[in-house]
Amino acid sequence: MTEDFAFKISTLCFDENYTPADHTRLTTNFANLARGENRQENLRRALTMIDNRFNALAHWDNPKSNRYSVELEIISADLDIEGNGADFPAIEMLKTTIVDHKTGARIEGMVGNSFSSYVRDYDFSVRLLDHNKGRDGFSVPENYGDLHGNLFKLFVTSPAYQENFAKRPVFCLSVSHNKTYNRTANDHPVLGFEYLPDDTSLTEAYFKKMGLQVRYFMPKNSAAPLAFFFFGELLNDYSNLELISTISTMESFQRIYRPEIYNANAPAGVVYQPSLDHQDYSPTRIVYDREERSQLAVKQGKYTEEHFIKPHHDRLKAWSAKFAAQ
Image (cartoon, rainbow, N blue to C red):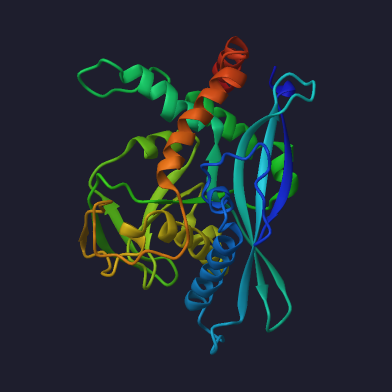
């Protein structure tokens, strides 16, 4: 059964001329920026933010803060579970390439960064909501996240992934606004101070089923910690420039999407409680529609239910159980 589950990878350049592909989740950070009358200016400003942040962090041998630029590719992984070429858009990520304008070198950056998944939309915006309708307390359905986690593990170990990428992915998300984070003495030269949360979260549990660990770091001159989800050892498996490519990319997106946290005028302290109601922040000049984003998540979740979960329910359930047993 497993041999019928095949991934096909395609790439698309993310630059100021980017237009979302037909199968792209429009709630994805980079896709949301590329819509509306300000689309090209949005993209240009976001890319400039990324380059400026990269040069600020990679400051050695970089006196004018213009030595590097970051190129981004959107990685789309479509899944064919029937072996007949009928693909479903399973996963979308970003890959960074670092351009060194001093030496002319092109340096492999990080794959992962942003994480986009239609099945995750189904889990969070359809299945979880339906499960909790009419309940007094919050709970999660049985086997919640198992299918998604197993599909992701299959992807990372698939020939399609291993033929295209030398290292496993790292994803960078925002902190949770309903947890408190405490700064530790652990200070990494690039990632900055490590923070520890006071509790776990549903997102952490969901990503754990994908095989990923999480650590929280606040890079120098950042306003808040970032959540890094990874395999292996985050601090030893990736170079400084690779880590900087992820920080500069995803912190820039978070400054646009969650300015109350990541573009706050005062940085996080030793004890930090993020809040989307925080008022002392500087909005970016980049248009991002958060309300539309939440509405689209439900639509995308229902699309997944109709076109992937329901038509293949029995097959997916049997495959996931077999995969987990292996």
